Length: 114
Image 1 (tube, rainbow, N blue to C red):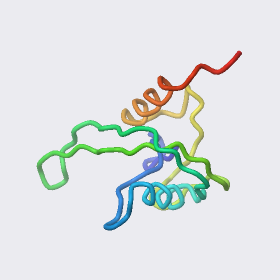
Image 2 (image 1 turned 120 degrees about the vertical axis):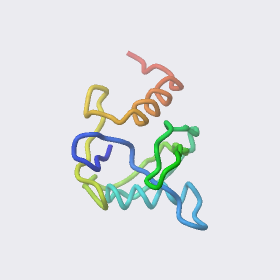
Image 3 (image 1 turned 135 degrees about the vertical axis):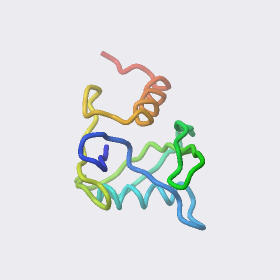
Image 4 (image 1 turned 60 degrees about the vertical axis):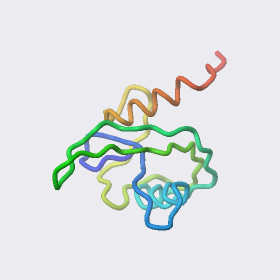
C-alpha cells in the first residue's frame, strides 16, 4: 500500500501515458511508487471509483484496471509517496476505493485451508 499524505493508504497505480497499455502503466507505476520490479501480472477485474469534482470544474470517475502482481525488491517510498505499508486486514487506514477493491478481490478468492 502507498500513502501520498502519510496517513491514508491506497494501492499503487495511476494513469497510463499516451500509447501505454494499462499493463505497462501498472508495471511503471509500481516501480515509480514503491521501487519494486513486477515479475508477473494477472488481470483480475475492472473497478469504477467514486465520482469526484475536477480541479477545473465538472466531475470525473476513476476507472481502475486491477492486477495481481508478483514483484521483487524491498518496498520503499518513490515518486509522490510519503509512506509504504503492508495491509494485514486491520491496518493501515485505506481510502474508500482501496477498501472496495480489496473487498472485491477477497470475495472472489477461495477460503484458505485451516
